[in-house]
Image (cartoon, rainbow, N blue to C red; front, side, top):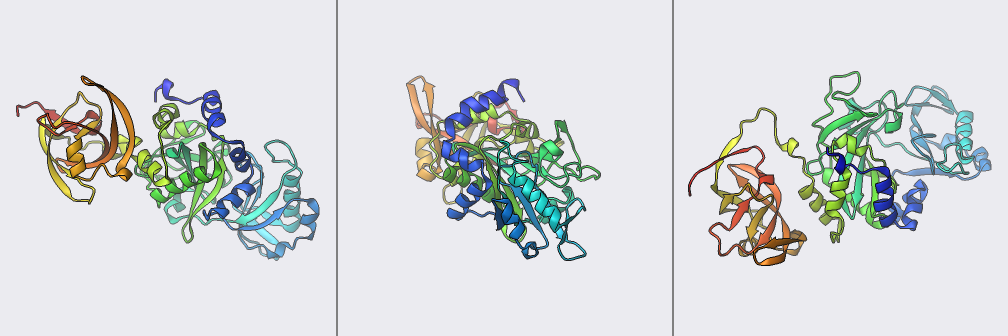
Length: 428
């Protein structure tokens, strides 16, 4: 990770958070209840809300026996996970609950906690707050052995309707079952293209195994990954937040649920991914992204982690300068194309006529347009999503479309798509 790629707090605030987030969006993100209301209005999934407490007298008259055995108490405008209590099951007696740490709570204990929340003890602005009780999302079987009591969540950072970076947060005994990094939860970086975890940190130190076990934190496949990314972008669109993070959980029975929106997300996500945010943000700034689906396609094309595709010790395949490859057309069929391996080019390029024949210039397959300089001057070329097979190796990438009708090969493969290959210098 280059220092120049890292996004600092001041740059985040001045270049992105203040420029791309509307006041209305910030106000919604600062209130979990407003965010829930907005998400429900647009039919996006959130945990079921049981009760909201705005005044102390409401606490006294509420019948707590109506609450289920498992639920979560939260402050509306809390910070850093403070004031959140997760009840795991009912106690031995009526009016008792046991939280994820094993502590027994009685009705009077709950009343005291809720009143403290209302008085603003856990408020980010030290102002009177609201408390609410919502359903507890069950732990997905995929994460059962890499969490301590609490439910892991997935944070997806979205900019300009493109999910640029993501992490999986795992509760630990140190974090008391909460998915909060400042309290000791583990954060695992996620490859945006595949939904597979890459690196993991606890506080600022890299970890390989979940504490107290030999379970590796790298290589975990996140369930429903495409749906997670699309839901995060939809949250950004409806909330008027151009730069934000959506925190999402996966219920094994009910599917995805949005926990909250964050208009000023933390920057430790860079440590978890071993990658800087600044460069990624610059790559998508100014792109015209109309739909959540298009934003996800752009993210997968731009931010795939090459280390995920490469396995240590794999034998490298040898390719010649000129190769016959198979390109997947818009209908999903493979078409043979003669191509040139060109390490002098960074990005793969395909002839405009060939791209039209293969159906790759369909509007929904064009990701964005980019200016290029050539001997004929400056021209704007479309960038398309492309899948091809080289030596039976499937490669998903992006390619620029140019007029190559006068050239011998109608397609060149750039060096960004040649990782894992050895090139044999040979004559045509």
